[in-house]
Image 1 (tube, rainbow, N blue to C red):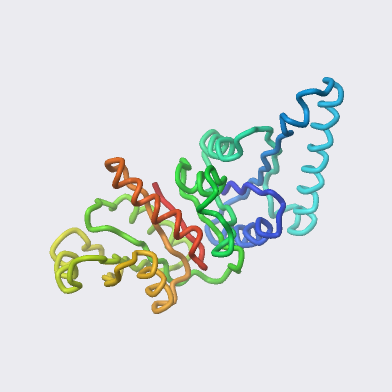
Image 2 (tube, rainbow, N blue to C red):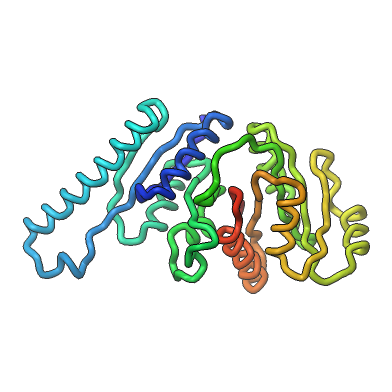
Length: 268
């Protein structure tokens, strides 16, 4: 059985993402492990006695346990395979370490959408995990509710060899019974020229549809495509490339994680 890691801070946004994750888990036959990374501020504990520090830690753990109990009460004992509280000063690192050590197939997290300062916060937990996780990450916008995933769009560049990503995404798409639509946002060349490249070069898979969107903005181009084709989920990937090219891919991915109103799945 596949394994989904769901980090939570017990917020309303996280609970919405968990509800989505639970429905998705049924589709792909996966179990969900919920973790919470907690800590006690050094500025609070530095001048205090050891006994008082321990009492503060115990109090934190009680809060976390109460949070887990509410989740299980809400969603049922059979819905969540495991809960775990993890002490750590760097939540993103703890989340990624847990995912790697426990061989998680996916990480699912909530995002706060366009109204947040997501892309302006250096070290944002979700953005860091999205960029660097050892497995695919599915980011769920705060307004997203689970619905049948009929169409997944994979945003791709003609400069990248992404056959492995397509294969991995195809496995996921088969599990949720969705089609895959490959989309390239062309910001410079003429649309007709890019369509010829698409036909002549590498994208010959029979299970995908292909669209070239002509738009000076990658984000706006993807937005328009998502609305026109009624896409349920957007897939992006961060390739192993030269540093400046990788930064560009990360920038687009990070902006879409903030901007997208539909779930986003990111491959590395």
